[in-house]
Image (cartoon, rainbow, N blue to C red):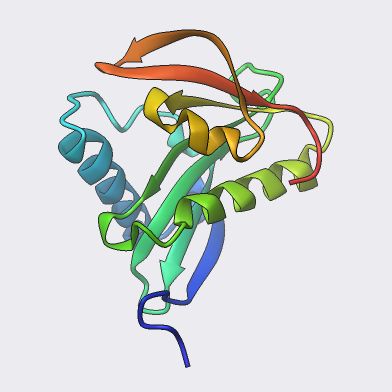
Length: 160
């Protein structure tokens, strides 16, 4: 029997071309709802990079998108590192530590596919401690992106 508070979630990795239209719609809706509407941040959320990424979705048994992240292999964006981004948990699923699960899945993917490469991300500054708990260290100065303070973070290569 499943815990009504903790739904059973499946982690699904997909290349852009393998996403169904329904999966893509759910991803874009979640990202827009959180990054544009909830955070009151007017920016072009569809940035043209999705076709270059792998997409991780955490999905309930009923097909509801609970969490998501975007994964870029080294070289795809002209960087030597793996890059994670657009890490988001749907409001209805917050408090279940799905952010931790997304990070574990993303870091495991990096370790499996690119074991000698560090992982980088651009973190909202208020989440620096969360990413630090997954082995990331800040570098450089805090900067504004779309009106929100961000910090570059890096995690050295190694096991997830």
